[in-house]
Length: 152
Image (cartoon, rainbow, N blue to C red; front, side, top):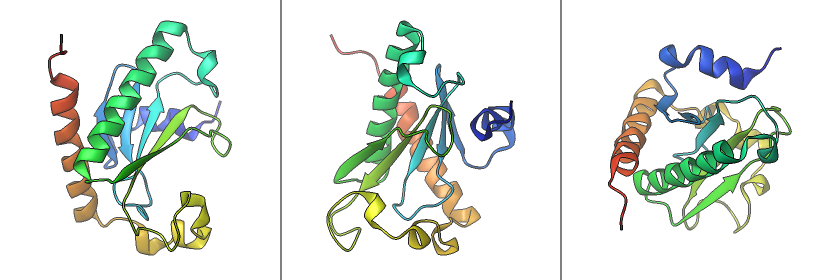
């Protein structure tokens, strides 16, 4: 089987986009950063639908996704978070977690209203320094959130 997301797990140790490994998947910065701080949460199991996961794993996966979105929001000072779980283009369960800011697009609405050529332009690919900064900011927030004691 040839799956780009499964390949991300194989190369995780040498991947500059890798932010964090969790129990149910890995966190990476998105390759394009039209909305700065956009991250991916790639499931460690090769499935295309949430309901295909064993129940306990699915619940843990959703819990970890919520923790990651909190970390993304804090790391990149979002006004709002967008969550996307499509898996149409790449048939492997993965979340797009997108920090949004007031005025970050010409009109209020979903990110898909931004023209594709703008979303995936070389101009919005992070430089090595920008990528390192984003990875470190998100890794820092994730470390705090993942390791904080449960409230009673």
